[in-house]
Length: 317
Figure (cartoon, rainbow, N blue to C red):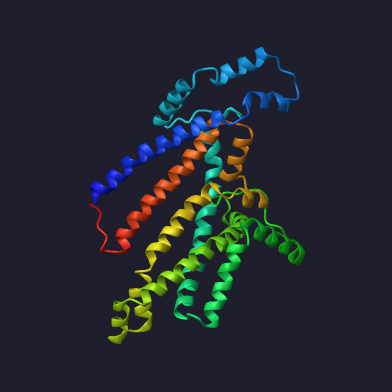
């Protein structure tokens, strides 16, 4: 097991290197120039000499190979450089927003699990009854409704019915937990509901498959309580595909809530992604892509370890 963990950790390095190589050269191929955008935003005419001077200051005049090697060397020292647009260190720019995005992803995942696992299990136990149909309608509605649309409905509902609107300024949980939850609980519910829809359907199908196994019929024939049969024999063996879906969706939530963040005025990683791409901020975009890629790779790794913990039959060598 120890050798497997070490091997997987070492495999992360070439994977991230491939992502870095790909995103670096694709950004250079994409049309647009950050230097021209800077001067266009200021509304002043800039001669060619000024543009060349700015490119030299940003290091864009050097060969692409040199820029790439210099950037990789900085990453090896955990130095992602400075933002080409704001001039501030990238670590600081991401650190400000990572707390918000990470907390929202965790809260949405908790909401999704609290909805998906009980509802999916109940639908499987009550197959083809009104309970099953109600859960299926609930999950299909979650898949059909975008989370940002549901967020708009939530905000309008509070404004029309209660004459109240969620706070627009982010407050850290460690500073004021009440103000923090008052702002983030609503986007977490909107995202978590959509997130739970897929997990609910996965839970239902997985539990149904397990309930048809011989060992479940044997457990019932031995006279075990139905609760013990469901929790110990059925649900525990049906968790593997559920864990896979939840783990991958959690990684996606770190950088994929662009529109939802705009609806609730959340300045998170998704919003920073849009701003960096709009401004052609190469260094910031590269760092964000690496961050999201690392989240996906790490969550895949954690899911594999959970497999071995949930199912004793799985052994990694």
